[in-house]
Amino acid sequence: MNLTDWANLGTAAGSVLAGLSIFAGFYLYKKGKRDEFSSVIRKKLIDIREKCYELNRLVTYELAHEVTETVIFSPGVTYQLTKLINDVRASGIPDKNLDEYVKHNFPAVTTPVNSPLISDIESIIRSAKSDIGELRFAFPGLYRVTYPVISVLSIIVGHHKRITRDDEIWEKLLPEILKKEKDKSVEDIQHILHRIFLSFCHKRVAEHDQEDINDLLSLLDLTLDAYLDKTNKELENISLKERRAKLKPISQTKKINDDLREAEKVLDNVLSPDDIKMYRELIVKFEQRNSSKEDR
Image 1 (cartoon, rainbow, N blue to C red):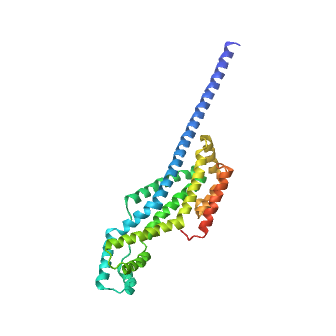
Image 2 (cartoon, helix red, strand yellow):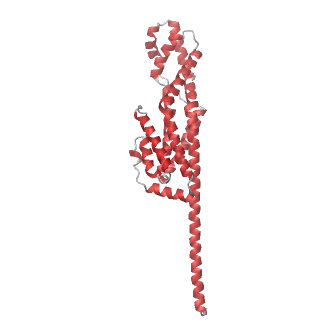
Image 3 (cartoon, helix red, strand yellow):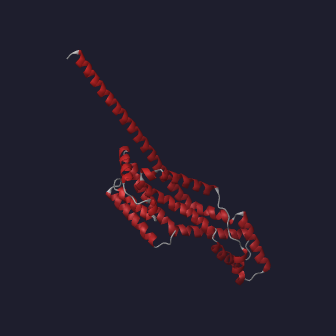
């Protein structure tokens, strides 16, 4: 080989090395982006689970006490109760006329329901919804499993507020209490009302919501565990498959179980056959229970 041939060989080798360097750089860049994406997703999934369980604890136990106490012992309700009780006792209204009297003389309860606990709960809900919202386009199947949990827990907050300010309940309870507790103080009557409203809220959760929450949390654990067990590359591939899947638009899924069924179309990429079986069994339980319930 002459000098020209050696020079050409060196140029070719340099080109190959340059190409390999570019390829290696691109590979490392892509791997770095994939690892960063997977790290962010894993943290989101862990945060979502923690927030859902924290909300379940707060909403189904502590919130009812906080809401009922906030309303019943509020200055506005205390004033109206005091006025009503004093007027009834001073005028000597017969028991048979109490229902009508209360209906026309006790105003609607419109007390704002604000407290540190309620603010904390609403803050957790907003944060969880934000985390879940970031899954909507990266993992549309997983999104449809995670957001129903927050949806149901958020609904309970509204139920507690509505129950404690329900005019029909107040109009029914007050005459009965005034007939039975003729010598009780206003504060004593407030404590009686508090216990009754608290039992209504807990009854609502026990009969309508807690089993749903338990099943949805089981579905959440089942799917999140499977996603968290995947490698970074597997998560990237799963995201690609879910984004390509033809799922029914969310605007067309009217019920929670509709979304859970849509999610099932892509979860076979993630869940084991045994997990898929358990997933389907939990959905069937949820569907059967809700088919006999009143609309939320």
